[in-house]
Length: 480
Image (cartoon, rainbow, N blue to C red):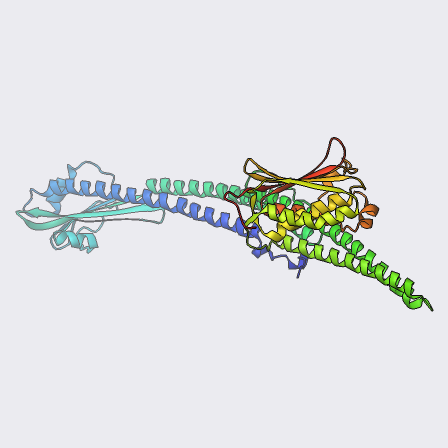
């Protein structure tokens, strides 16, 4: 059942495409910004850690080398040895003996000389291992390194160095601040662009949806105004093309229903009038009654013909056709002309034909019979007394060609383009008087086209009309 989408049926904002597109853009850029604000900082931090560890270990190695010639470490000889070491700019240097007692300390307050220290790095050095660490906290890089002092492969002490660096920490903090500001600008730009792009995209989808709603409500003339060359624009163009066809179909359907109703109403009205006349007339004589009944029979036959033609067109429109088979047109043509010859003689019309053999086409015998019968019957009906109808069957260039020509009044040029429309009549009064339903030529046209052929109508130079049917020729003959 057809329905409409009201404003209350519209999706909530979080279910709309605009919200989803915008949220998708924002989530993607947030992921990119998160990577931008983490990866460079982590890499830079790791490079600083490695650099400081290497430099600090090198400085410790220099100090260890200056103490390596001593057999034992004391406050005096350590101070003398360390005095010749160049200024390294380290925050603190400690030298301990093998028990962990501080022998040398550069801390300005005098440090911890004479006391014992058990820093992790010093403990590891006294165990014979080099140790180092570097951390970034409190807006400063804190680096530590230690190495054992050996004499004849015996550990006689340890050297510990500590660096507190705020300069490189400030550089890293500046880099982090710049990245945050850049990320903020990018996030703002992306937010604005995502809103614009999602609104632009969903606006065009909204236009298409509105156009669909308009057409669903019966406004077949409405078109989607979507410009561009992308997929949405192509959908809009296809929708407009579909709507064009739908409008044409709907117009044809309404005209067909109107014409069919009118055609059916005429014989029904006549039957009702005649039957009422019989019932309401007192003492009606037998002869008059027979005449009225005869008229009723003619109108009933006309009604039957219209119904049969409508059913035939309905089957053609549904696309349900019998399986095609090879059919030789000549025997069918001869059968139709034998039937029509009696009608032609009554109207004093000269009906002649010429035919070639081996004119086989794909279709059914009933279809071929219907096409030939309708065209010949139409030509005989509209050819005056003493006229002539010539039928010709031949083949040329892979086609079977049937022509039905008469020397009647012909077809007005203005009516030629519409001659195959349903219920279209050049002369309505004359057509009904001749018993036509206005569907014969439409049935011919649809039937031939369904089998890959074509029907053409034209006026003859000397007067009269000629109808030409072209079917694809089937090589090798066919059934009778």
